[in-house]
Every structure is written in C-alpha cells, then in structure tokens.
Image (cartoon, rainbow, N blue to C red; front, side):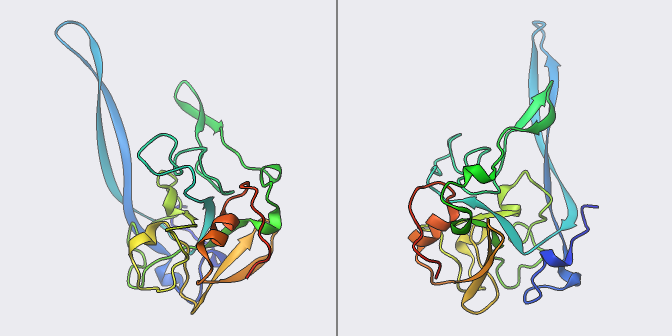
Length: 218
C-alpha cells in the first residue's frame, strides 16, 4: 500500500510511473527498561533506521512560513501544532501511549486571511537528478519528517527558480516548469505563480492568519 501512488500526485513534466517509488530511511526509536544493581529501573533508548521503499509525489501541503522560529526549540515551526499553513504537522492525542487522534486540526474557520488568499498545496522543489532519492525526493507516506510531504515559503525561502538548485531544496516550493510553480488555494482554485514572486507576498500566501492582506495574486 505504501508504494501505491495516484497519477494526480505526479507532475508529468517531472516524472512518469517509473519514478513514482523511491527509497528512504524509516527511523524507529526503541526503549528498553534496564534494572540497575540498586534495583532502580531506568529507560535505555536506542535509535535505528531501516531502508524501505515508498511512493513519492510532486505536490505537498502548505505548512506555512518561518515566523514561529527555527532555533532548536519546541516552538519551532516544524513541530506539531506550530505550522502557520493549512496542512501542518500535528501532535498525537494518546491513551497509554497509543495514538487515538490528532490534537492540531486546521479547519476553514482557522483560515482567517481568506480561503482565496491562502495556499493549500503546491509543487515541491526536487533538484534535477535527485528523483527517487531521499531526502530530496522522499516518500510522502512518512509523516515523521514534515518535509516529506509539505513545504514553507517566505523571506529566506523563496520559490526555487532553478531546478538544479539544492540549498533550501528540502523545504522550498518549486517546479520543473520554466518560470512558474503551480499552487492550489484553499478555495479550490489553481494558480500558476511566478517563481520571481516577492518573498513577502509568498509569506502572506503561506500564512493562514497573519492578518496582512494579499492585494492580488500575481
């Protein structure tokens, strides 16, 4: 099931069915309780990774902008509930360590800037020559890594205009169409946006509730 992808998830300019499945690392944490000579029980945690295959895709959710920060803190933009976009990482609601639901859900009423002024999803930048390679073109089913299936935009994170570019590639929007990148807005409309879009305007389109109007889409 994790290797199955839909044709609508692939941009024909970038990939065919032969490029729809890639490999990557699936990280797992194992905790073992160890009893010390004193009788105390302490947790010993180890992290391992396994190479698995999974479906890749060209379109990702709008996780927002960098306004929450990126300082190695729990408040950073990529942690659960901190995303300023619409399709964001979420904290799990658990019962006895069993996940039952999601804490952080974004609904229409949360998009106070307007559905026609906010990105829902768009084309994710993947550098030329990196198809099916992780982390540049990672499998979209793995929600442990937010940028497998989402992107951000704004100052310091423009839409990538050169399909060979690396750098911010893991977090940026971008396409293999000359000069444009396609986005779906939250009202269901689809727009081709210029890759030269001002990064302040890009930030306003990525943030669902910053209160700054978007005068008109370029």
